[in-house]
Length: 330
Image (cartoon, rainbow, N blue to C red; front, top):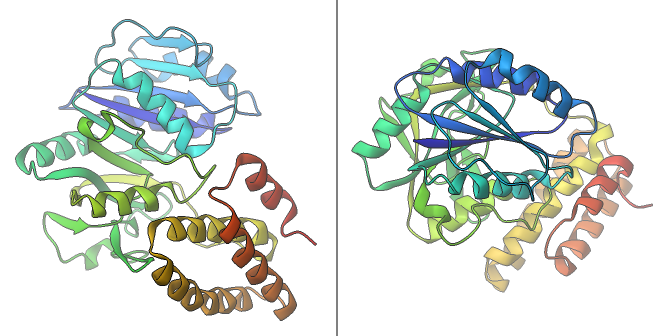
């Protein structure tokens, strides 16, 4: 059996669509842990009211993370957890995994709530990992919901602090591999893995409130020699926009790179990190210039990034929300 963790934050409609698609799968048993991560809307009310309408299976409700979980769980049953607080992506998923571990599933999966799965996606993942036991984690082929013939993510490679995606934003028809692609980077959007990855520790680092968790996980997997693959015959769709943000997203861009720089500082040797960041700064300047930021804004961005990435060991919820809401400090 597979324990699937779905994190909800203010997106109950997407979560219900995702659950509905999961209930139409066949061939493999699974149960769901839906963690409402302190939604600020009526998500928990709507999920409690409507989950039974998209599923014919039992739905258990946990009113807080300290509440007792059901003593057992069966195929396609659901646990809805009201986490009451927004713990961020990593910790929210780790909380869901901690509950799921009580039922000793053979496999686990993190699945974004804004995804739709094909009926045989899980069966294909399970069959692949049981036939190819050298792999510890898998991802399905992920296409855009808005354009199902266009690839969103098939994983990628990691090299000296950079990542390169396989077939990102390319037509599915361009894929050359037939069965799978060996990858080094795997997205947290759809992460299927063996249970032994969380026997003694959390799956995801909680240094970052949001972002960078999958990069850190992928580097850890690479360092330990564990194999990852994208299984091309397992398909899901992701409701994500093709285009990136605009000038108003300066805070979001800043947090993204602050996460990355802190992570690389902690993963690399001091010499490699010093060389890496001075290669990366011109790239950031070029990116911001293309987004029509002034050179004064770009210099402020880089100066602040260089300083804070040197003194911080993580990005808290408070810091994340400050920059998302206010941009850079004046």
